[in-house]
Length: 70
Image (cartoon, rainbow, N blue to C red; front, side, top):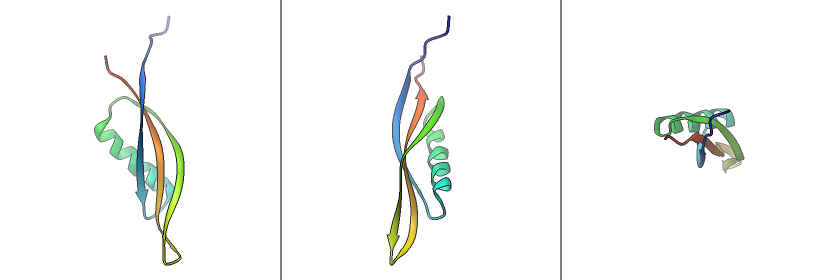
């Protein structure tokens, strides 16, 4: 029989001046410094910040899924 597991989901927002991909990577890298047992991410939303008709930042809102420790 499979071992039961319990996970938690927390939401984070990350940004990058270069790309959505880099914003996701930045958010993930930061999350690994605080959270243990990360099993996945789910990008909820992608936005850009605009100033003077230029994209200045790519932003992502994402869920980080991680297992709760015993």
